[in-house]
Length: 211
Image (tube, rainbow, N blue to C red):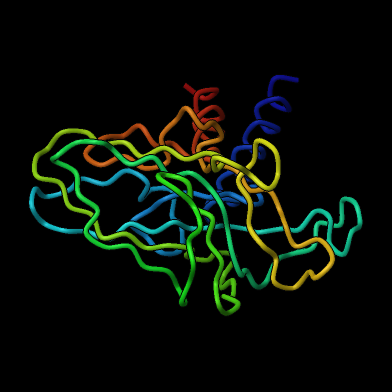
């Protein structure tokens, strides 16, 4: 019986390890990384003072759960033409956002940290991920700077961040969720290790069983 139990846990661990190699497996995750494909390992970044670096707002594994007005359709989203969320950057004179760009010409109707962005052209999802926004960031010291995300000030879906499925004319809005699973946990950490993706947490829990 003991051998069977160990085998079951070993298989579970192997399964999680195989899944985690494809980055975030949970649908509709929104995070910030220094890797444009959304590698969870790049949600924590050690910056060199006064040297700019790029950070990407990445949507991974987008799924439309109500395609064409249906329920639980789980239709993969292949094109996105807008998004809305709140991105709270550090408010300090040692953290600078030097530039903000979108994959295509866009209009942001949000105010302050809220972003309500419409693209003027559909943007394709490639390899289960899509860069929605790119920031050029610079810090001037080695302090820890954390970035948080959550719903915009006036969310289209109550209490949720959202994307627009360009392939669904009937019900294009789909809710998306922070990569760390909790809006109180930063999605990106400069000179820190506070941003832990949901899948990384799950895998850590399984590994703990073998200690």
